[in-house]
Length: 173
Image (cartoon, rainbow, N blue to C red):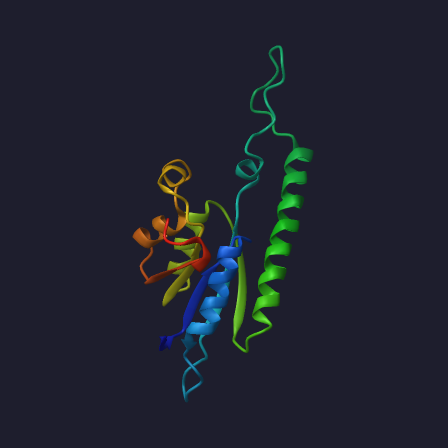
């Protein structure tokens, strides 16, 4: 696919599906090349890290027998944040190894928040020409309970979206 693409965002979450979407983007998209008075196009590898409270899936419960229920435990939060930084580094390291196989301009961006909302926000802020995402191919039941980040982005982002499906999984998305 060749176009006048200046900014292509590829959202990665560490899954093989998202890394497959990254490979697909490099193999199938041609960015704007240098021309007098213009800049090269850029791939932006975007990872959204969930906030510590979401990452933990819980927070320490209230102190029994009448203790404060909104007490924040700094060590607990710090441990979660440290773990998330290690996960993010591993994800970006994997993406970086993929990027090194291609001769393209790549930037990485990490934001913290709800993935579906933050992906749309970054796409808007960067004036993305295209958003590329992998699909985990959730069936209808899982999608109903877990939601679909790609479905949300397709309906809320301003730029076109390409959802790359894993060929091995078939068409259950």
